[in-house]
Amino acid sequence: MPSRVRVLAVVALLLLAGCAGMGGSGDAGGADGGGDGAQMSDGGDGSSQPEAADSGANAGDSENVQANNAMTDRAIIRNGRMVVEVENYSTTAEAIAARARTSGGYVSDSNRELHRDDNETWYTGYIVVRVPSEEYEPMQSMVSEQGTVRSEETTTKDVTDKLVDLEARLTNLRERRDRLRTFYEQANSTAELLRIEQELSSVQNDIERLEAQKRSLEQRVAYSTLRVEIHEPAPEPSAQQVPYHERSLVSAFLSSVTDVYVFTRGLLVTAASLAPWLVVLAVPVVGGRRLLRGRSLPLLGRRGTSKSVTEDGDSGSDDPQQEPAEEATGESPDDES
Image 1: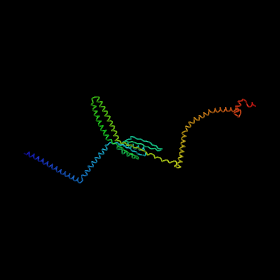
Image 2: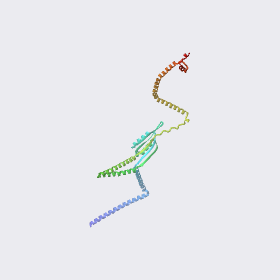
Image 3: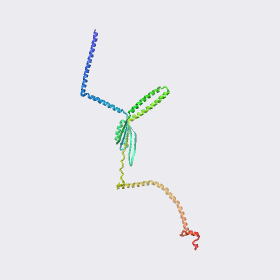
Image 4: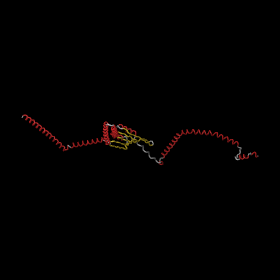
């Protein structure tokens, strides 16, 4: 009997303790509930609107961050072209090349051409630089400061999908290569080994080809290309020539004097150029004339002697027809007398 009483007393104490705990928790819950009600009522007055605004702002910021991350993750190939007119070609080209090297890039191509018009000369050409993508816009700004920008353009190409496709194909090919290697190790016949080896070689070639394409795309994405065409100012065209009859007397006289001077100087230069040739050609001519004269002197002597003999043998007759007559008759005038 006393033991039952003790048991009942312990059970009653436990029940009382449980009821007291439930009552306390109910009071606390009621207090909390009252607090929540007060907050809701305050929210009705407008205190809950800033919290809603903050939550909306946080959501908007998170969306912007995601959008920026998406744009950053895109693989973009960027190519640009600028035409700049500068005072000095060499100085500008060297400055652009130095800036490209400083920013981690390099010069991939360059060309320069010299133009000439009378006594005026000027250069035109281009230089192609490749710089990291983040340095593309600073490079454009630097080029703009070198002179007057005549034209500027930039083209972009998104190759993100192509890179993703290449990566997926590479993953599949690598998995296939691993399986073929496993089959090759487990092959039991020579024919099977040869077949698996051929397939393995083909897969390896495909992997290397796709890896090369991927590296090329990644390189073009990592480095942007900028072509800068540099032009020095061409000389202004000369003034239109005045018609001859409208020229002033002074200018006509001075022009004539200039022409005479040019003509005289041209003659002197020509004579100076021909003098050595005249000396060289004169030697054989003079020698030839002297040789011919030396041969002609004996002939002239013989002709003079025969002429004197003829003159001495003449009878002194003035009639050239008388001598033939006398010769025909064989008689002289003295015989007749």
